[in-house]
Image (tube, rainbow, N blue to C red; front, side, top):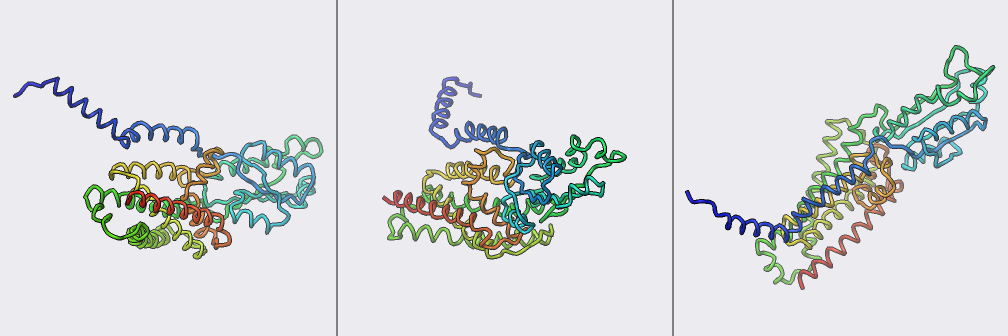
Length: 376
């Protein structure tokens, strides 16, 4: 057996460290990705959201109504951002996602409290994401015992220590708080993004490594033609994935299909095209398949964490919500969940559809421009 030459070992170490230094993709995985994950999990992720956007309809202007609202705001879970003038206005705010909670205080609230006549307030919650409103509804259940302790004393004190009113809670869109109603539709965006971006991000780099790109560059095929030819097959694949996921969602998990198929179809088309164009752009700027997959991972990980798929969007700090609002998966998830659970049409989903349209135009333009540079 030949003896180990530490000189040769040292030479091999120098060679490997040199290659590692030149391979920025590996360095980014080893050094940068853990830092990004640490920051996201430490600062952005919050499984117990506070300051949830709330709208109120107050038909009783007495001091007891103000006391109830003040207690809700002081809890830190309710952030009253809108005041409605009718139940229909409250319904519209919740349906469009402007608020997650609504509170209705009826006109006879003060009279019933004073007369001990089983006063009630109505709290409605958008339960399409049960985790987002769980803490707030827990506080709501304790409101009758805590809200008016300083207002009701002496002759106004409740007999027998009974609560002065009842908080009636309605969970809308997901009455039983089934987490699958939120997770399973969201999986559509995650799986499409994972497969389409990952697959197309290796398209050009695979041809570059195999040597077929030089042959392609020698042909009169234009950049736009190459892009269309590479994207169209994956569009069909994305549509097939969508049909499978939606079908299994209803058969296996009994996900309610409320309608809104026009918004879902348009959002799906935009998201698939945008994801494929992004993968094509990544492929155009990468030299190897490993580098392309690394860049795709850098896109995918923050997208999954900041889009509202894994954790409540409203529970993240402002800077994280700002980044998440730029991520296309965020808007696609809103379209899917709005269509499937709330029956949103194009008119209801237009802000998210417009955001996806801007994403498609921007990424497609960059991909074509970058590929033309490659041709040159």
